[in-house]
View 1 (cartoon, rainbow, N blue to C red):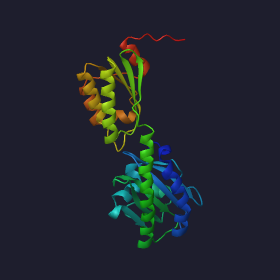
View 2 (view 1 turned 45 degrees about the horizontal axis):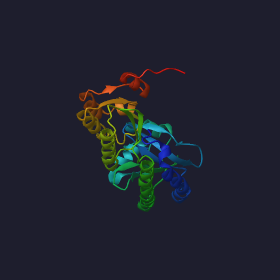
View 3 (view 1 turned 90 degrees about the vertical axis):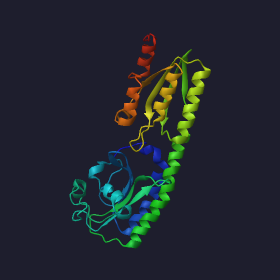
View 4 (view 1 turned 30 degrees about the vertical axis):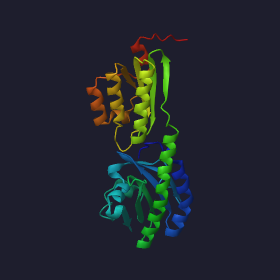
Length: 282
């Protein structure tokens, strides 16, 4: 299970889930409860409680194709209710179910306020358990409360990064550091601020540093391509740096960037060397 954004980003969700885990495990008579976040290739456990042995540790990552949570998200009503995962035809072939000796299991899908799948809220036990419809409704009601905190965490994450960080290096050269999640609202502000700054300050080179960019749901923020196109039309040379593996794996975005024939370097220092600066070690 991956972290996009990192698990530290979802502190409100993490703290709230920890507080209700005692209530959940007591009410449903299970030994473990956890919240997991879905990414493009994996599920990550953000928080968990294990009343006996540690079955599901925080930070556990499971490839999405082999995760029980995948069955929850794709299941009828986006839930999974199983008295014994080791015998259930939907899960008995999953390695993790057998490794952890999972039997009684109940999981519901967590969504954000826009209805997009965020992850799962699940409980499990090493003994067989028969969960009722009332149990399912109870766990879903908890998930509905937690969904509001997902949006709160996203908002706080973006608010901290709302200002467009442009750093002037010298006359005609500036650095744009892209950080966090770039949603539609932030994309519009980002584009306007960058292009206005470039025109007002007679910029010749714009270094775009991307190591802090967060890719959500395997979707590269296309606004980056649009900004680069606009800068080139304005006669400004964009130079990209800080491309992380998660960014490089986005075929749609990287294909578009390659067609733009943009200079790409490994660091801001290398970008400055390309521009013509001589870096002197002190």
